[in-house]
Image (cartoon, rainbow, N blue to C red; front, top):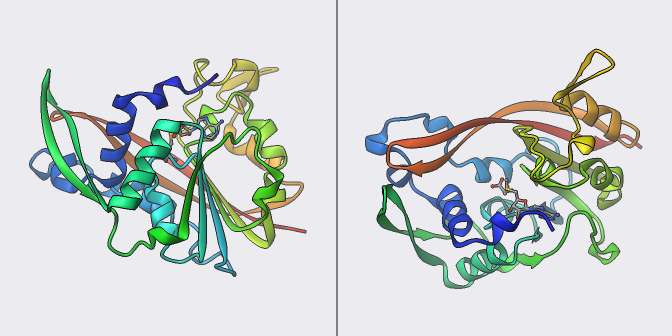
Length: 252
Ligand SMILES: C[S@@+](CC[C@H](N)C(=O)[O-])C[C@H]1O[C@@H](n2cnc3c(N)ncnc32)[C@H](O)[C@@H]1O
């Protein structure tokens, strides 16, 4: 099915670097947008000022887990789910060992090695990493005080279907955070299932507006933020993006 890239060694090392790389690893001689670093950690803190309870949290599409580690600083238990077995195994290994050595592209075939660590403030014992499908979640997961979907919706085959029941995962005071750069690609989402980024009946359809339509029946949009992030390609090339974060609270 989708997301075979996310099973590759390249994806594992790219995401370990993205989630845990230091400024020295990520920016050549410190040059570049420092505000774009630490994206996963910032996502894991999006509940701040909104979540009233700090019992259970869910990181859906967690990749290698840095947002889940950030959530474990506040929440008693964190469930972290990703479709990719390779990314989940990398997260589990880091959680158990506290460190990992990764190699990443420097120039052409030249690679560099670096050691990454679980964040000092995290409570790895509170996190359960598991392989799973956001399109087909077990009802036994229960409910959560905070649910994070970071850069997931534009990687799903049918995001509207996933979002249709997302409110059921929230406790009465629960908070949902969705971040996305809204990079719609047919490789992951058939065009007929995109939430925005196209013209319909002469009108531009924007993902932000579709999210309000889809979620508005059960959830209230309480905050919108721009979250820059940087994915390193090699020493002298980075991908700079700005995700939109929307924060939702249960309205009934
Ligand atoms: C763009 S990455 C974002 C990862 C992470 N949340 C972050 O912000 O760095 C998308 C993630 O969604 C995962 N994913 C894709 N389809 C999924 C599905 N159906 N269920 C759960 N995870 C999925 C991928 O394996 C990948 O880890």
